[in-house]
Image: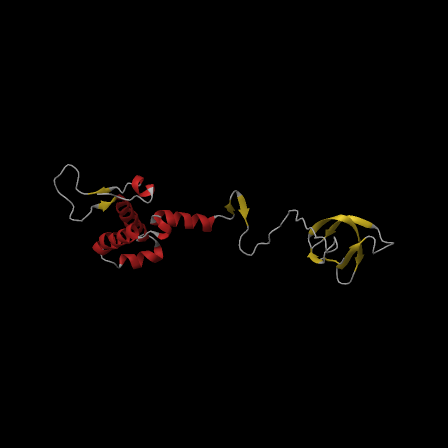
Length: 195
């Protein structure tokens, strides 16, 4: 008989179960035994029902349940449901811990870098080299909105325009204007590059 092992994770992940009560000969009437994680879920649900019964507003609703239903049936149902559930291939307790950790953290990280929250503006600070080919001029058309700091390889002349908009051309095309290679744009300013 041959057995194909597709992943060693299943080989080394031992499923701990209880098949009989220790120091007795009484075997549990559950085929395959009771997983230890299910006992943990049962204990957690039992304690949750116990403490929810003492909360002022919720306690009245929980207290309306009969004691066998409150302390046996509901925790048993929760334990069976959570022990069989495997969202994302993980145990329910690990999934809930990861979900809560994600929601409660103010910052998220990916590959050691902070990930912006949804709707949060992202500052992008990097050099973006842009090279033309032999058939086009060195300076290409572009429209850049601030805030930004631009460094050009060739000197350019910047001419102010209307409504916080400026136009940049090669320094040779705009004679009489000072040439620069560094341009800083404030928030809301726009620079149009025209070859």
